[in-house]
Amino acid sequence: MTTPELRQLYDAFDDPYGFMVRHLKTLDPMLGEAVYPDWPHLRGLSGALLESRLVLVVKSRQMMATWTALGLLLHRAIFGNPGVILLLSKNERSARELLDRLRFLIAGLPDHFRLRVGTNSAEELEFDLRGVRILSLPASPDAPRMHSPAGVIWDEMAFTPHSEEIWAALKPALDSGGFFWGISSSGGPGNLFSRLAKDGAAYGLKTHWLHYSEHPYRGLEWVEEARKGLTTQKWAREYEISFEAAEDRVYPEFQQRTNVLLEPYCYQQELSVYRSVDFGFYHPVALWLQRTVDDRIIVFDEWIGDRATVQDLIDAIRRKDAAHGFTESAAEWTSCDPAGHSPGESGVSPIERLKRAGVKVKARASRIEEGIDLVREALREREGVPGLLVSPTAARVIDDFHGYRLREDGLGAEKDNVHDHTMDALRYFIVNLRGSNEKKLRVGARVRGG
Image 1 (cartoon, helix red, strand yellow):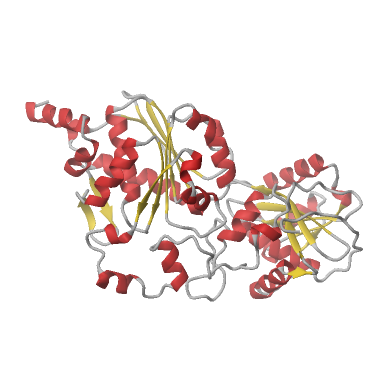
Image 2: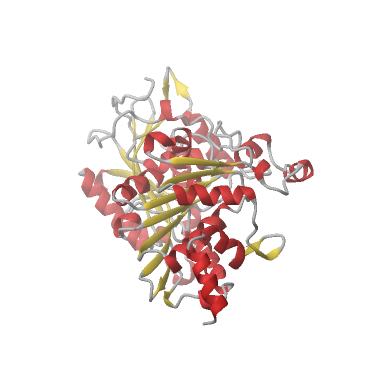
């Protein structure tokens, strides 16, 4: 190693921001490969991330906040302490992209900064000589529990399912001294990120705001061009960092105060019980439901699969049933997507596999718009009580009601592979229920605001 190279290492050790400006290259979606820019808002962001252990970055879109966090993480890996660092994002594709960005940063480094890589997989980068493991994982309630991270970077936090469970699972590591950087644009109201953004100090967080007006190339002409094709509400959320209610929610009728039960709901033996499933490709889901004498629906439990098979779904149904104290004979039926009749390459359809396992199945065909309309009707209040209620134990359903959006053209719901699976399962149930006449029994349930 030459003397100038040693000097570069020495200078970089004490100057993480300078290390990024002098030695890192990023990948701009419009310009391609570019050096990490020395812009005032990025210098301020770096200072905020380095000065405080627990930081929430609330930002407009495309402000290079994620690149900055990954650059500082790379500096830590080269010069800092060993340990496990978790990268969390909303789904598998986003988790892989985070690790790919980190690989891109490493590939652009001068040779004398390069780290010797051990494990290099879709989910992990390990640096042999530093004792640093970086794990990039899609959101699941158990992801943080399987590790004792020295730090966490949570990207797209407002759009991540299981956010409440993940935050609770992270708390022990954070309370023990781990660093936390939560980064996101606004996802609207009613989620963990919006709550933390509004009152970060109460949770020990420093909140750092990044508005597009701080970007050196975001003038009036840029605003005029960027706003094209966006609704006023979407622009407000994604660029003006608004946490007001979203106009493009598929189910604006769903309100936390009125549609979520005050207390966890317990299965009641005298009432009919139902299930509904969405097979998904990697993330099947199952919901458990009961209804009252006046035809109100209660979603009281859920199961969310992670790269799970149909057999995993069947096994989960049996476990959940047993936990609630009933068997298949007590279930009226299980609704699902009529497309589950397709056998695919295996020759046996998902619906047929459920039937062979003894599950009673209903799969009434309907237009998506018809099903959404029926769910909207169920959500509305009748005599002061909504027609559809959700137990707090079905946390993913609650998150998805807030996050399920219309497409930008307004013609139908967005298939984002995050919020759509539970919403599809609920729609299948409502469609099938409206075509049946099972006996209805009374149940008492207190609701928020009731």
